[in-house]
Length: 176
Image 1 (cartoon, helix red, strand yellow):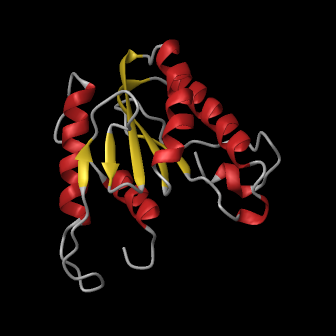
Image 2 (cartoon, one colour):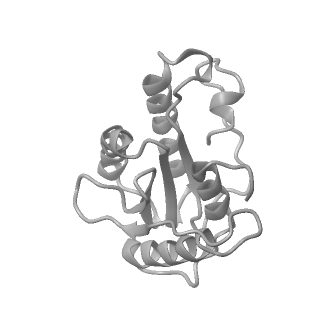
């Protein structure tokens, strides 16, 4: 993926990722995604040659689920029976706020398992607000904190039309 920064490359790869199967735990999705990203990012290419990008599962409450070097953090949220609990959604906001210091390239939130449209929209709206609050003082696109939400759940919406809640044009629409 020549010409992309590492964050954008990870976003595109996650969009392409197809889990090996439907798993019953977040942990299994995490391992599947980690393996896919490791193989994809370290594949020899005519543009990069042989790369050595560290892709690892992070351990501890203060780190993302998967780290791409120290640049990109990936937070995975697992839905069961269509829902992600409200406590998990609230916790996600705090996690992203905390992680943004550790992962300068940005954070990607990936929904897996079974997530209904209501949970998806709740998470999208909360992350939209957080994105705006984090970036409101960075005019003209300088030093913008990258944040993306990717829905890889079994019950995902095929087409999501984001609302321009804060009147910021395409910057918000393109994120989620």
